[in-house]
Amino acid sequence: MNATSWGCGPATAGKARSSSLAVLTEIKNRGVADVCIVVCDGLKGLPEAINTVWELAVVQTCIIHLIRNTFRFAPRQHWDEMSRDLKPIYTAPAEAAAKERFTRVRHQMGAEISGNRPVVGERVE
Image (cartoon, rainbow, N blue to C red):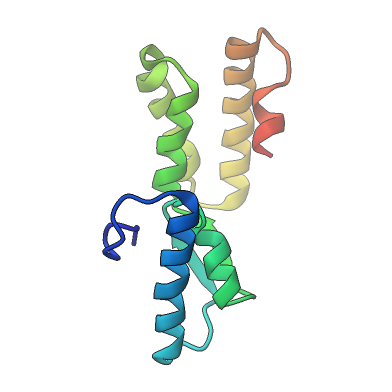
């Protein structure tokens, strides 16, 4: 769900949080007493609103939105290569395999982007 699907339209972070909080409170009032995991799109204020209503809920950004947002940090000319490099990570059969693949890509991308300085991985982990 995003703010538009909730009928909130475009919103500032504060407005999005208050709109999300109102919707989530209504959902709780209608009987959803507890939520374990919420996967959302990264709408500003939404994780805080979720944790205000359900304190123990774990909020995670959707993998598609995470991947899409990584492209903002690279020039358009590298997007195809990044797509090829990232796919083995998010399609890995287990966490250990994903971590190993991530480490390889991190070192490769870090060397290309930062001239062998360990920049990329330290911000991610």
